[in-house]
Length: 497
Image 1 (cartoon, rainbow, N blue to C red):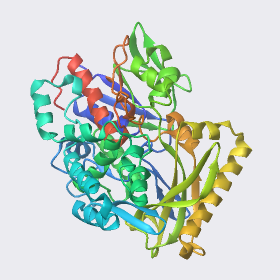
Image 2: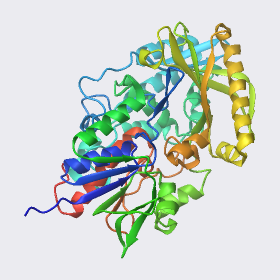
Image 3: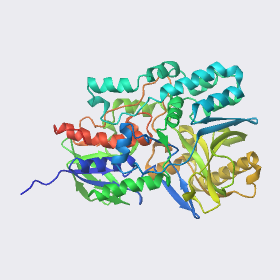
Image 4: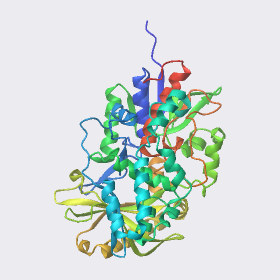
């Protein structure tokens, strides 16, 4: 009689959980995923309103260049392949100040020319910025194996492929985006350097993000985030995996220092040989297992909200005419807007006209984002139900008014489809303080990275964006693979999967 397969249970059906499930099946395990929501995907999500589709995640997908290991992971999990169609976009974003407008184009030469024409006095700083973005194009997310499993040969190969990144870190790793902006004399260039990422982000984070676009390794798959998540879920099922949706996990059961399985909210026990947590680590430690198991560095990061802030946002989505001339994302000044204790004088809008599947013919979706952080989450959480609903509606109206002020042609052609707050991310995905990325990388503080294991508990592994900065989709997808490789290594099997 043949020996039965070992069983892997994954808590959470987001990108990390789906990846872990697919790689578990590839490695010869049985795999079951338990997802509390009706639809898998986690924060890689979209939804429909009044005949329009609101996409909530992919502004660009790192790893779309077939020449790197991350692309192989995305292909393995069914997210993209050689036939994937991408949005026809030519820019990262545009910044506007007092009638002056500049764009970070995917074509670096075009960007350099435009910025220099706007501000000849900043020519040398612009030249350096462009050169270092070219250097940053060599930056890749480790995707073959976890860094702690790498040998000397692996590090040498990674160092060779990323030979120019130390230059970027040296020049832009000790300043934040605000300080980068101050290197420029032009007001619009100063704003450009602080528009896309929070001002406290290390400056090199902006260069790496932009370089992903200029290198061709950061494209936008058509049909959006939800469609990509569903492709992965289909791959998992087709390989023989079992995906439970609408099923909440109450705890991970630990007996004799070993993860035995999970207990569902209805009280039933599901046993397994291995358990992978693919949920927010703040939810894992304290809700699914005792907080005492949290790694010390992670505990310190959660405790120090100034050194390790998170990024979230208040967002609105609108139906508008497809003829609206603004392409992709633009940031602009607006009448001061009070939200809780903070005042905003700058917002952004993103036009999704590049994907005609999101709206009826002749129409498109426009989304606005008010970048928020921990203290904003505290504000929203402090409101009771009626206060929350009223504040949300009022803020949406105020943002709409400011959009119309900036773009008067929308006065009779803008309809609010939906609005959501940091609490929405927390409610839907148990996201810490509504964060849709990992901890912000700030100057002078260690980047967050920890092994996806729980010290003192065997057969319990962690996947998800929180295990490594900067978080996001690429970290999530490789972390699922890494979790399976940790199981294989413990069993003295090949980790090539």
